[in-house]
Amino acid sequence: MAIIIVMVCIFILGLLAGGFASSMKVETKLALNANNETEMEWMGRSGVELARYVLGQQMKLGGSQYDALNQKWAGGPGGTNDVLANISLTDVTLGHGHFSIKITDNERKFNINTVQNNEVLMGQALRLLGVDGATVPMIIGSIQDWIDRDDNTHPNGAESDYYQSLSPPYFAKNGPIDDITELLFIKGVTPEVFWGPNAPDHPPSIFQGPASALSPGGLLPTTAVVSAGLADIFTSVSTGVVNVNTASQSVLQMIPGVTESIAADIIRLRAGPDGVDGTEDDMPLQSVGQLVNAGLSNQGAQAVGGFCAVRSSTFEVRVDVDVGLSHRRYFALLRRNSPNDVQLLTFHWE
Image 1 (cartoon, rainbow, N blue to C red):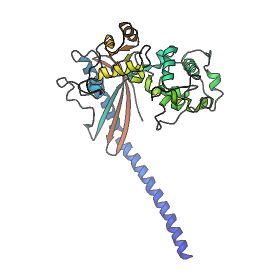
Image 2: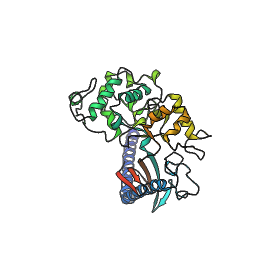
Image 3: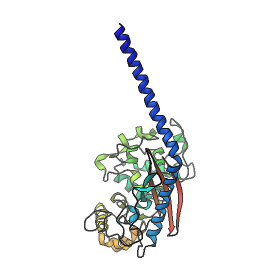
Image 4: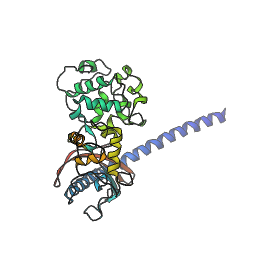
């Protein structure tokens, strides 16, 4: 009995010691983060300023009338003789730490706020994703109802009266989408539709109310043409035109008149001989008219010109900061109006 009592006591003391050690580890981490808080934030802001400089200088470079994946801002090699040749976007040492930045243009995607009334384009996008044809009108109508400013329900759509019946209840926004993840609040948009079927590690859904009214996940895998989700082809902030030099094949296929083969030809055309985007031999399109080289007729190229351009103006910046054992990721949204005017629209961290 004495041995058993001693073993129980040792076990309990071990649990207490383990809990204390875990608590101390958390407290130490919090103390380190608090100690490095100010330095990490200013390093994050420094990364954003570096991104603003790179984007401004890229626009200044002689003859650079387009934005493409082989340029410095996108992580490409850039020119060997330009002012950005010696600029690094990774492992930049500053103060007691270092940071890396990643710049992505929003013009590689369609703006959901500007195309939501184009039912042909929206329907094409949803069918490419493999959405059940019976639910396509519901999703389109629900997105339109979420954005428009009235409470009149579109056919197959949903306004506040529908969302108030859910648990928990909420109201339709009746305004432009500010963050693309708002789509997860909208009737018919399941996590699979939003993130894509091949993204199992996506963040948990904020809203899954309507999912029970759909086929599992809202997708029909046998009809999917692309392995993407709404998050891959739509953004909430951009100029509204798509940059053919940075858009994915999935986005290009949404454009009326652009088939799967033509979209693949556009990618091959701009990627150059090695067939890989973002390398030295890339051959970016310098005008939308060059799409005729990808198989489009002159008339088709002009039609696509209504949706496309070769420049980007809105950019998302991600800055990964490390100071000692502390790590933080910062995000910023930039709007480039001219080489000397690159505006900071938003800045936050997670």
